[in-house]
Image 1 (cartoon, one colour):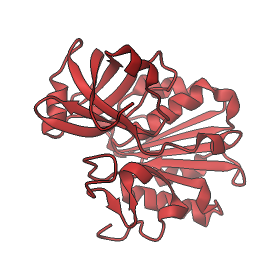
Image 2 (image 1 turned 60 degrees about the vertical axis):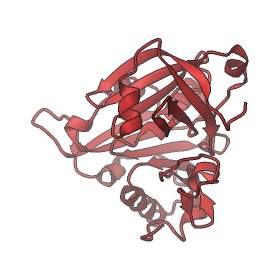
Image 3 (image 1 turned 180 degrees about the vertical axis):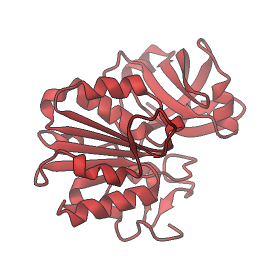
Image 4 (image 1 turned 120 degrees about the vertical axis):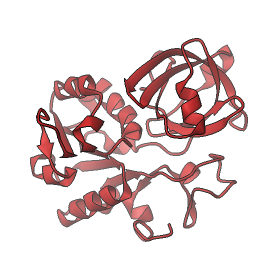
Length: 276
């Protein structure tokens, strides 16, 4: 596929996840494009709204999901607000996939810890879907989700489904919760004493605010987890997705083409430094 230009895709389903969060399920209109398109969990597409522009959005579906491609989007800007107004049967442009995904071959036969914070959990959804459909390839799976307020919690049915999978530990936390919030109150790191994994055979994947990922990384390193077992999905202002515009430069690397998934070992010298 030529990733320089958007390819037309039809919205085959639109799902309202929360008041400002929605999922577009897409299918390419050209059969050859549809057949050629392949992606890995953790990669992203550039979604192009005609007359408005394009935005980078993570692919949250499994690579084997009937050649349909899900993108969960938060309506926060001009392009995403425009995408929110679309319906089933409308068309958008898609460029991609871009970037490096999660290290799934390295993760096989290992225990898994997936930590997400806030509403930035989309990059981990596809890898969770991938693991759940190939459950026998992985050890114990820990899914840890933290939000600022319990009202930010969504996908309850999805978390319930994951919790019912064998050898799967789902832990949920909110910094603040209402009276009926049934899970933990506090930061995600306060749940780590409930994790179930072999420290000598584990792979950690995380996505969310960099302060949270820094705290998680330091906790794991202090508990003798190898730095090369820590993987992070980074976010920056990605406008071209091919490393030409420079908006997402991170030291000598570009988030769009060298990431967005990085080993902690790769970026530890810059991670958390103001200006990077």
